[in-house]
Each structure stands twice: as structure tokens, then as C-alpha cells.
Image (cartoon, rainbow, N blue to C red; front, side, top):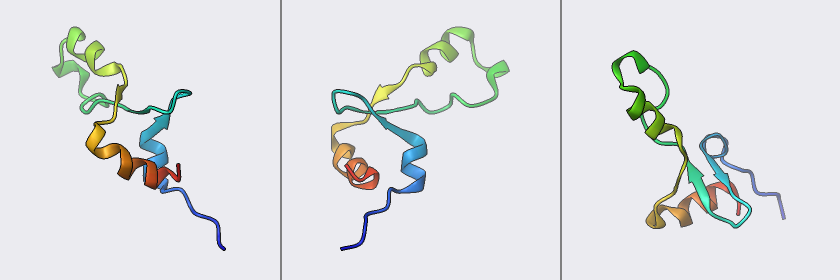
Length: 64
């Protein structure tokens, strides 16, 4: 039986916490910060949990 390969794009975008939750970064927190207020940029900095509807698909991509 061959080994399963982790999806290269998924491993760059998602991480699994110690308790098993899948975290992702918020959209729009990459560049063009001169157009965003500091409060908005700080809000986008924190990671959030992946939506429950998407967790099964993301776990399959990560090989979990």
C-alpha cells in the first residue's frame, strides 16, 4: 500500500492545534496595509478555526 501524500497547498494554509482544531489565517492580511486602519489590520492578524462544513475536506487534504 503506498503512502498518502499531504496536499502541498493545504499544508501551507492550515495548521492543526494540539486539541485537533484546524486553524486558518484571515483573508486580506497579506499586503496593502497603508489602505487599512491599524485596528482592522490587528483584527485580521489572529487565526480562526475553519468552518465546520469545511473541516472534513481540509482534514482529508492534510492526511489527518
